Length: 148
Image 1 (cartoon, helix red, strand yellow):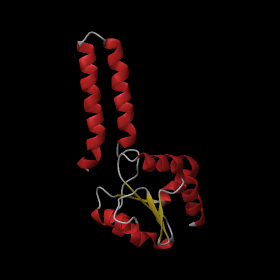
Image 2: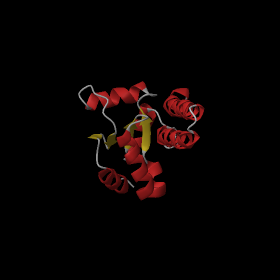
Image 3: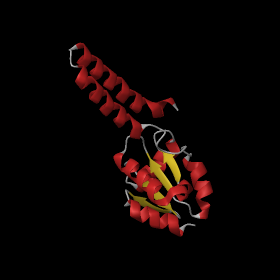
């Protein structure tokens, strides 16, 4: 769990250092916006944006009903874009997706490498055993709608 918070905490820490340096240099007006930028950058990278991550083995087992499995990693802009669009367009149906954090789950990382020629390209969405690498969020919405 702590690994998931490293990137957002680094953003907040760097923002605090920049804001403190600005304030000490006599530019208090620049300190607040600088800190705000770093805090706003930390938000989308925090684990609060994504639902609880499931393991790849558990997701594969429970996805037998056709629910999509989305392999992602923290800090990935494409994964964040997909998550936000899924949340906005699907509402509660977005919970039907299994989100696997490949940095926390070695089996998930191995599954992604297996379908991407050894690369950890995310998001990789698997629906009914068929992988889709970095699909358009609209395509994933269609797959979720069809799956139930």
